[in-house]
Length: 422
DNA sequence: TCTGGGGTCCTAGGACCC
DNA sequence: TCTGGGGTCCTAGGACCC
Image (cartoon, rainbow, N blue to C red; front, side, top):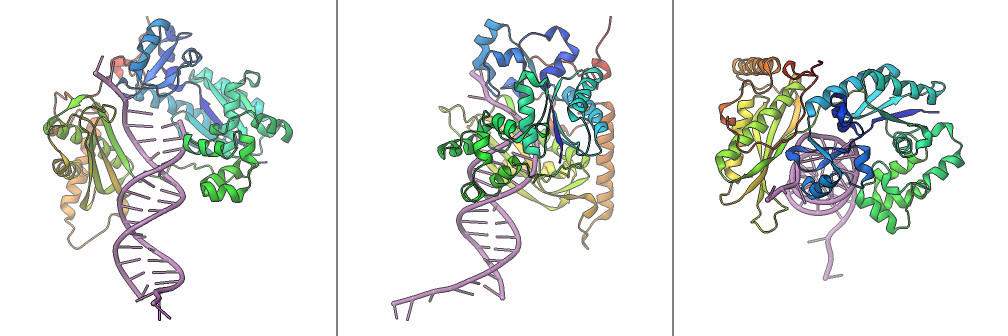
């Protein structure tokens, strides 16, 4: 039988912070999204208080004061580095790994013996070498492995490892009968509501729903989910991450922005970041979309949002060229008199640099010059720190920059910020 | 005062073609 | 009175994920 494992780090961002600040152990801790907006990671103590994911932080301030909740700004540089360490360790346990997200990985363990013990070894190795606690679910399909992981997390008697393959069909069905249908991977809030209206409340009920009916009501995606719940693997492990088809960089501002000049700075900054990512994956973009919007939560102030797609004359990854296009778009959609809350850019029609189309009009010398300049820019910023060299138009003061009031050090990636042992 | 950011896939509908 | 059928491509929007 197929054996797919899903390894999921517990309370990942909070666990990363605790690695370097042991005093946070045993205390209620949350990590907030950019701009210190919403809760994106919660310690067990916080979950026990009944605080949900994605709650706006300002709504929690009273509760936080009463229970002494510690709130940290997110530090993605740190989390990405810790994630890499976990993933590299995990890769030693199977020839076939899919890194699914910053804190999750699938491993194909088909054909291996004594999987529960094997998984326990994995757990203790990661805990010992990196310090991050994980839970592991094992099953014949990805969707079931996700559910097995859910059980491993919720039910203490499994000691953080749950192997559906080691259960009889009857025991498994009894387990599935106790899980709400909304817990299934790929069943979101919308579908869960519709399923419940049809009388399908539990995972077990979805598992035994007639395929025809599911297909007619929800389409192929849900049909595939039902097959996966029945142990038929429809989703393969993707062990190579394909290059992105679109690259987005967008941010809310720390304060509302009114002036075009500030929006221009922000758009240049975001385009610069997006272009860096584009070059990292050795690609060119055929177009760039720019958008701005006011704060939709402020119902009393005038609302405006607009976007514009600018096709490029030829595909490029030159920051200067992309910025020029984005700025021309911004100038066309900008309207004065609004309080802007967010701006963003999206690179589209992405192709590999190696498949750059050739035409008789190509200015090869100019292309080579651009490639060399961008490579130098990237090298300097990688070596000396991101933002060492930037376009002047990005600005220096950056009054619009996001809030990060309580951010921890980049303990593992910056010489100046290493943990100090006394 | 204060509500994230970055992705993918699917579907429906319109334009267009023969 | 009465006006086909089938295909492609593109875009926008919805739903979902972490």
